[in-house]
Length: 114
Image 1 (tube, rainbow, N blue to C red):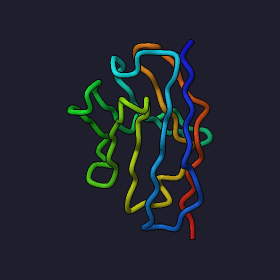
Image 2 (cartoon, one colour):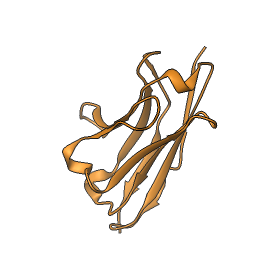
Image 3 (spheres, one colour):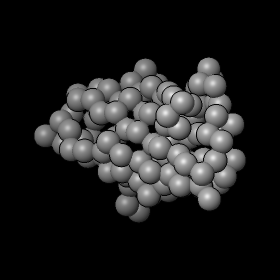
C-alpha cells in the first residue's frame, strides 16, 4: 500500500525560500510520475508542478515558473519542491500526489508572512 509523507513546510518571510520533501513508500517509486498541488481554505486544490519518472521532464503552473523547482531522487524515493522568492500568495497546504496510485499525502503547511 502506497504511503506518502510530505515535510518541510514552515513560516517564512516574503522573499524567502523553502524546500519541501515527499517520501513515497510501498511502490516502485521510479515508475511513478509525481505532482505537487496546493490548497488554501475555501479554494480548489491547485496543481503546482509535475515531474516525470526520471526527473528529466518537469512542468509548472505559470505563477511559480522561475521560482519553484521540482526534482526527485529515485534512490531515496523522494520528490522535492524547492521554492524561492516566496510571496504571501504562495501560502497554502502543499500536497504530494502519486499519479499512478492516485494517492495523496497529508500535506505540509507553508505560510509566507512578515
